[in-house]
Image (tube, rainbow, N blue to C red; front, top):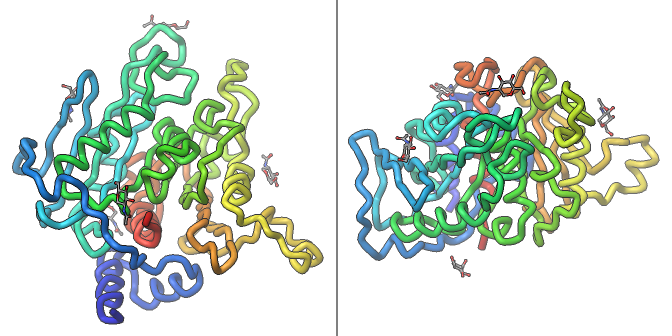
Length: 354
Ligand SMILES: *[C@@H]1O[C@H](CO)[C@@H](O)[C@H](O)[C@H]1NC(C)=O
Ligand SMILES: *[C@@H]1O[C@H](CO)[C@@H](O)[C@H](O)[C@H]1NC(C)=O
Ligand SMILES: *[C@@H]1O[C@H](CO)[C@@H](O)[C@H](O)[C@H]1NC(C)=O
Ligand SMILES: *[C@@H]1O[C@H](CO)[C@@H](O)[C@H](O)[C@H]1NC(C)=O
Ligand SMILES: *[C@@H]1O[C@H](CO)[C@@H](O)[C@H](O)[C@H]1NC(C)=O
């Protein structure tokens, strides 16, 4: 058991390109990043043949009715071994291919539960755009979403198809997304049927319009959330906005600090002790504050020991604009860390269903 854990940590350290000592310190400090030992739950695809064909880059573009999603299987994909699934939703005007690039989720070496991951990038439907007269891909929950499209139902159907055609571990399904796709990731976390389908959620620079961040967000369980937001984000400002530059109130978005606090409260992490209150700690919830990367502050909601699954990790990046943090600036902003490898993968590894 110990050696298995050690090997997993070693593997993650290699992927992160972080010195071992630093990674171990972070595990100790965070207290919630130990890989979960939950059992696997093999999907139907582990015991039946699939007709899906993957090309020599391990991609398949799957069509489902009028919808499509791009699937990437790891180089070491084994059709009899359950693999974790990470779904990643693109931003407004983007598409599956762009999301694959900016998230880096198809990069070699990414592992969950010690195995390569299946990464899936769905395409949004075409909506009317921000002026109402265009045809631009978007997800449910934004003022520019395609009217009448039920992306929650689409996501459930897509995951069903994936489960039937690939050997996946249904205790290790994860959702992530950028901007409009990050807002939709949040909507999935707020919706009971999908809050119980995915083990953890990574909304990155999420566009949290009211439709994506409903006031009556009732997931039905404590939901692990890892969120990144830049202080220099001009599209979805960190401090929130009452309307966009054109005065349209349907473009209102929340203050990101308050958004994180709302998740911590919802998850039952809000037991601010009298001692903290007396000490003038007005963080809003029991939080540990650290600086895991240059110009980056991490606030982790700290729940009771019996409720460690219910964490909210909020990364605030000082000079980052509206971008998925990446050392290569794959999404515009260059940061000293890769959000995917340094933080999202370890966070997902620590959270499972079942
Ligand atoms: C996948 O197929 C859909 C539907 O034919 C198409 O719109 C989309 O561009 C394709 N994506 C890729 C990455 O080839
Ligand atoms: C960051 O991710 C990119 C691909 O997404 C990769 O090429 C690069 O090596 C990574 N850097 C680090 C420090 O992990
Ligand atoms: C859409 O409407 C906006 C503002 O009303 C206008 O500036 C733009 O040119 C229009 N675009 C198209 C493609 O018609
Ligand atoms: C965001 O909310 C926090 C916590 O309530 C508050 O301290 C901060 O001033 C707010 N920021 C803005 C720009 O309103
Ligand atoms: C395995 O997954 C199925 C459906 O995907 C679920 O009904 C069942 O409760 C899961 N079992 C365990 C042990 O997690």
